[in-house]
Length: 414
Ligand code: HEM
Image (cartoon, rainbow, N blue to C red; front, side, top):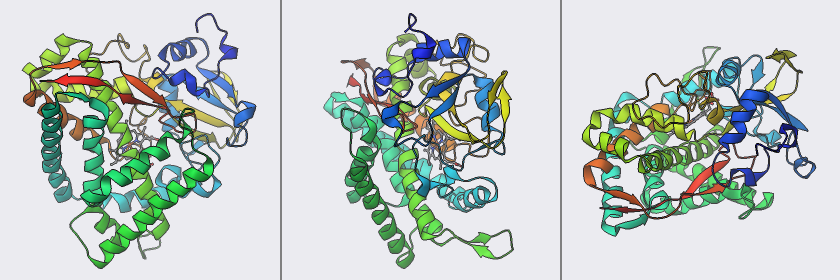
């Protein structure tokens, strides 16, 4: 790459991400062109909303854009794909009052009692998953461990019966992997999967309303808050369907990637692994570093609502911008020795959950708690963990904001 001109770069090429996030390219962008224009290749023009987009790669710019929703609207959603039916329809694609209302309704589902219960469930699932992997000895850490905890936690929150989980999260995975050129699904095939997920969510909501249970989905299917006009407001059926899609995707794939890449970093640095085994109280700080290190969400897109300028580069009203979180999280202006995984790093002002704007990750504390519990149980229950094969990734395509996901990490647990 270093010999290639920056003008020849094509960040939409899925192959760039086959070996993980291409940090060397973004290090160059941060230095040479921190506000850079990516033209949309002709082959993607039908699917993309625009003929190009701005790429923000520095921490300060990502954070500032993320915190200015009036200048950079989220209305068209976080992906570069053109999906008018999603505009303003999902939490991630709402602005202003609509967004505040929906966040308030959703937060009402996460009562302190519910969150306390989640803690117990996390520990129980972590122990069960790790013991099963231990019994096997040799396993693939991604499907056999990292995949399972976030999946069961989201399913417990939503109240998805255990018997439905393998099927439902199987199709969620297919939906997410649709952009991988080696697995590519047609748009119609993707729509069929999405329809199956919605149908499932609708049926689940109906079941909960008929037969209320002690779970978040029951609360979300019934909760009411005061609207702006003083009248009661609740989540409509379509809002619930879309939130279901968001939760199953946002809550499972991201945390799984952070767990996998966190363990992988420790496998490459036995001293830091030994430190965490010796001092479990150091795990929360290490988990924050795993989240910075892995930055599971690659980019979120926004659109400029008026003409503006960043670092002297003119951005016109109506142009698309993209905020690159993994790049911001390797910015040497903010992080000392950013390419070193440092389990003791403090402060750690990463933007992996967003830059502190109104869309800041709703699941940030859940993801942190899941990871802390998982690594506590992992170190308590194992004496050695050895990597027995290469870490492999799947590129998910430019229209999936996650862009790249670890697929396989063979390990031996003892
Ligand atoms: C390590 C794991 C995770 C990472 C790195 C992550 C990252 C992110 C990022 C970057 C955003 C966008 C923030 C912004 O635009 O300012 C986001 C939003 C969101 N996340 Fe997460 N997330 C994780 C886990 C979770 C979990 C476990 C859940 C579910 C319980 C979740 C639910 C959401 C939701 C609902 C939003 C949309 C919030 C809004 O638009 O107001 N995330 N997340």
